[in-house]
Amino acid sequence: MSWLSFSFIDFLDIVIFGTVLYLIYTSLRRSGSGNLLLGIVALVLLWVVASILLDMKMMGKVMSAVMNAGLLALVVIFQDDIRRFLNALGSGGNRWLSVGRLFRARSKKSSDLEEASYIAMITFACVSMARKKVGALIVLEERISLESYMHTGEIINADVNSRLIENIFFKNSPLHDGALIISHHKLKAAGCILPVAQGQELPKEMGLRHRSGLGMSQQSDAKVIIVSEERGEISLAYRGELVADVDVDQLQAFLSSSFKDMSSVGKIVNVKP
Image 1 (cartoon, rainbow, N blue to C red):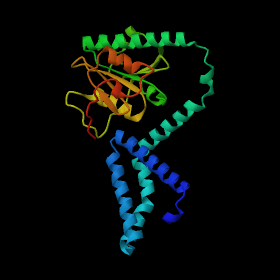
Image 2 (image 1 turned 45 degrees about the vertical axis):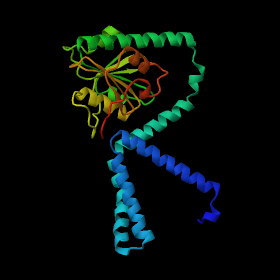
Image 3 (image 1 turned 60 degrees about the vertical axis):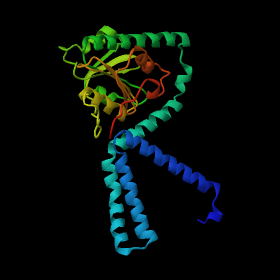
Image 4 (image 1 turned 180 degrees about the vertical axis):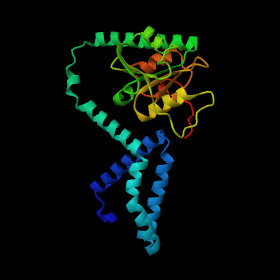
């Protein structure tokens, strides 16, 4: 392709490829694999320079052999990231293809009242547990299904109730060490095991609950609430970002359906990869 024959399709090809590469990089960066992707890109550029531009025969053959075997290695290395990316892509597609949402019978007023009650129940429980220094880990399912994580705990399928949430995380409860998963305004499962954030450096005062909450936010689009047992503080995690020591207003904004990103809630904690 010469610059004289450069067409709109060529321009569109470059834009789409660059956008896809950027989305993959940002997705991997949230899971701590961004530097690994940059290393792979550097290796590919080295192969192009050695075998194509400089026509180095020995180096080109070695690099070609590495590239031929590299595809399988990439699938193994990035299997969790690939599954999460495809899951997010599929759930996003389902969001637009779901025609049933256009025919909901609920009125906007009743829906707003239900959401207000739902937010109030969770907020009251979290504030009460923070005041009593009762540790808690609550996960709110969004578009990506968390069914596989629900089956690691005990299925409840109960209405959202602040007293029930507090009882689940009561120190002598057999379910208090795991996570509570909420889906479609229902307490779905308790005592659930969450993925722990790997390769991330958190502030020293944050322990396993915060690392598990951050890991869950990296693996899905779920909203995560962490109540610290040691300090009685409430922290929030979403899309690999963490906001610590929030107040009631910030928590309610986080739980609201109008929530968009963590910058609208508070100062994001510096989480080093």
